[in-house]
Figure (cartoon, rainbow, N blue to C red):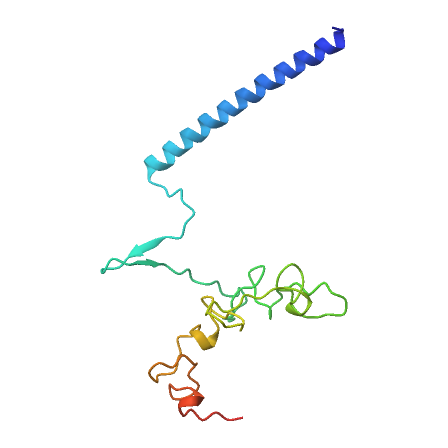
Amino acid sequence: MSEEEEDLAVLIYKSSNTAKARAAAAAAAKEKKEITASSVGRRTSTRKRSFMKAEGENVTKKRAKKKCSAEGCMNLVRLGGVCRRHGAKLSICRNEECTNVAIKGGVCVRHGAKRKRCSYEGCTIGAFKYGLCRRHGADANLCSSEGCTYQAKKGGVCTKHGAKVKL
C-alpha cells in the first residue's frame, strides 16, 4: 500500500468516527430536548387544537384572519401584511399575453391549473367550500323548503320555490 492510499484510509476512518460521534450527540440532544419540552408542558404537536363540547364532540378553534395594516382598511391580508388595494402583488399567469391571476403552478385555470370539484356523487361543478359546490351545501344559506338543497336567493327560498330574482 502506498503512502497516499494509507493517508486516504486514515482520513476515511477519521471522518466515519466523527460522523458517528455527531450522530450520537444529535440523538442525545434531541432526547434531552423532548424530555425538557414535555416536563415543562409545552405542546410538541403540530396538529390543530381541538376543544371538547359538553356533549363530547370535538370542535376545532378557528383562527382570526389578519386584516390589512393600512389605516382604516378592513380587507384581509394577501401578501406582506397588506391587501391587494394597498400594494400586495399577486402572481400573474406565466403564459404570454395572459393577465389572469395564477392559481397553482404559476398558471391560471384557463392555462392548466386544476380546480377542485364538488365531492357530491355525480356533480362536476367546482367546489366552493367544504369540498362542495353551492348547490350541494357549500353555503349555509340553503332553501328552507323541505328536502331542497338549492341555494336560497330571496326570502329564504330558492327560485324553484318562489324567490323572485331581478334579471
